[in-house]
Length: 351
Ligand code: PMV
Image 1 (cartoon, rainbow, N blue to C red):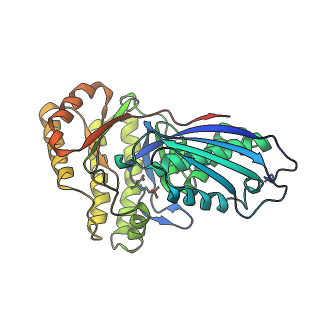
Image 2 (cartoon, rainbow, N blue to C red; image 1 turned 135 degrees about the horizontal axis):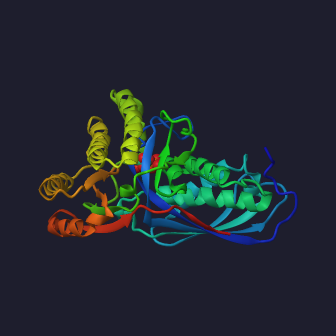
Image 3 (cartoon, rainbow, N blue to C red; image 1 turned 135 degrees about the vertical axis):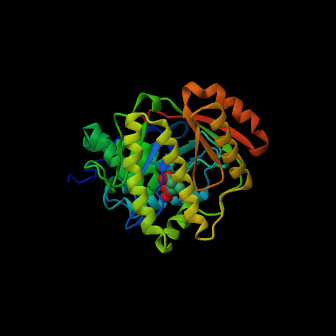
């Protein structure tokens, strides 16, 4: 492997990355080793929920420092706590990417969505950093020439920052973690191809039931799975579900898609309930009942998924956008606010 140490001073420069968040359809819940998933997962990349990161660099020392020299400028909700997490992340990469310890970095980052939206900001933020580090490596050392190599490494690095971020370096449908597909890996995510056209412009309308911070962090949630008596069954079911869901999405079978996605969302919360954590709110359940009644009466193939919180993600083909808007209006008493998003094409890099 080429040494990633700069042999001489380089000119100051900058690059910009815009990386999207994602919503898992089959959830990553439980980790092992160094940020490796106990089960595979699959997600839709979002479009309107993203992090924009600008990195400026100046050459500082020929010998890498032990700690990366970073100055932060935050827009929106990012905080000192986030800065500390990013600092630790960069420091952990100095051994393999010594150029990071030779530079003075200035990082400006902004999320397009409020923290209260319950959308994982760590996925888009860490994906933007993984992509930015790869873009710097490519620029300085002329490595990562093919897109496959570039995005695979970006996914690997993003994963080291936050597991779900591994999936945010690609657009469309993305899987991460080993299942019965030879290309799949626990180390990095891969885009899923040959998806039926009905899923191409899929919508995700997020009904924010409770905008307060989550009572259980995802790190705590992953730990629950180390001690849950149900974890082995859960990991096996999730593995089968990833394969089933992808094949259903390749066929365009909306009915099976709905059954698998809703089952999966409830199972994630089932895992928490059996460990004495209750993240659902009465209004989450009310909305699920309303949605199921609406689907039965209208025939509109809208379904829900949930992240590790009370907010409902409504997933539906774009052709039903107006009908779902009317439904969202009807169920107003059960949520605080909403955001419309849709499946996106993936990150953008300007260097
Ligand atoms: O990436 P983390 O460690 O924040 O974990 C994310 C876990 C879920 O959002 C609940 C599921 C997923 O696969 O995104």
